[in-house]
Image (tube, rainbow, N blue to C red; front, side, top):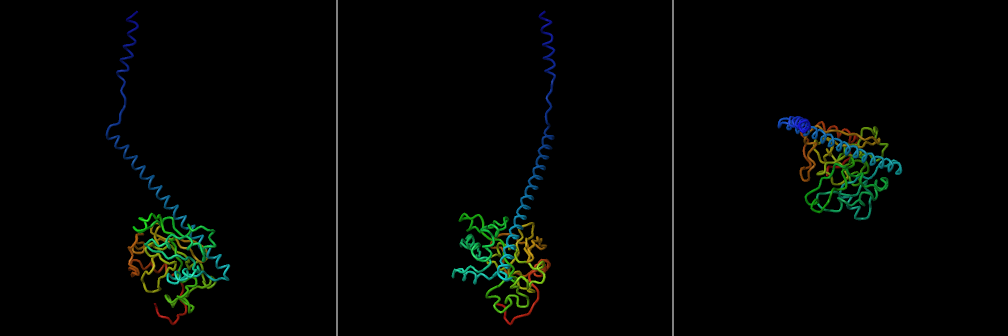
Amino acid sequence: MDAMKTKPARSILGMQGNLTSPAFTLVELLVVVAIIGILSSLLLSSLAQAKARGKTISCLNNEKQLILACLLYTHDSEDALPYNMGDDQTLRLVQQGQYLNWVNNVMSWDTDPNNTNTTLLMTGGLGPYLSGTPQVYRCPSDNVLSDLQRAAGWRSRDRSYSMNAMVGDAGDFSTNGANVNNPFYKQFFHLTQIPDPTQIFVFVEEHPDSIDDGYFLNRAETYEWRDLPGSYHNGGANLAFADGHIEYHQWNDGSTKAPSVPYTLNLPFHVKPTGVADYHWLMDRTSLKGPAILHSYP
């Protein structure tokens, strides 16, 4: 009886002893790790692209709000486009308590409150037409700050967009009916003066090292960048046109899509031969040739 009881036990133990557990070899483990790494990089790349795409769409929506506000302003002002003045006149009027410009801040790389004071965005100009939302003035991809501003704890400046200098009342620059900076081109004071609103831009993203006032100026046929467009979105910028549509345009030349870094641009600078197409594209959508005025360049 004892032998009969113990024999099955030895048989079972023998079976267990012969069982083997499969294991990864080092090569197989490395292959698995490599596959996981590739999948992770693809996933992170997709997420980064989706995030960038989301910021581009948000920026497009911001400019849509700006151009709609501009068109509402024009409707309420008997077809007159907003004031679009340079930095000196804008600051002078603000000191007098007059908020006439489409936007009333002048930006820099120091800690001047003009960079973050939302009152200067929302008071006067287009502010009343934007439902108290100063966020629409800044592209979500624009978090560029100087070292001084970062040390002060800032997270961003307030504005990424500027207005075409040839659109609106340019104040002192256009007292004689044309813009002294572009005397052979038309200054559009009224919306109905623009013969094809689909071809004239009103708002554009501006390079952070170029943006100061809201007056985006380049002198036609000089082949130099005085103000440089932004390139936050895959080397391109969003623009809002006088008919209300928004358009994305990608720049071709590296000098046009300069890195978004403080103190890197030496403006004005001559357009490189490889960047002429970018310059022509933008200037063709800035204004049209018109009557000259007897006024020299300042």
